[in-house]
Amino acid sequence: MDRSDKKKAQRRMSVDTTKSAERHDGPNAAESTTGDGLSPSLQAHIGRQVRAMFDEVAEEPIPDHLLRLLHDLDRGGEK
Image (cartoon, rainbow, N blue to C red):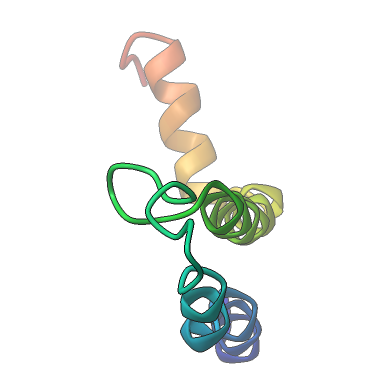
């Protein structure tokens, strides 16, 4: 992942906490959060952001040296 990809990921991962805090200040605030203090909608948002970031990483090509290592391991370490 190069520098521009990291910056994009950071922008996607940023969450405006003031917006999420405003949603939870109402009379039913305690009922709308889970035991760890995050609402289900905020947890879902964070989950989507994390999956988006890791999906990009999973799509990156596997470096040749790792492919050779995996091939060697499949052969039982024989050379």
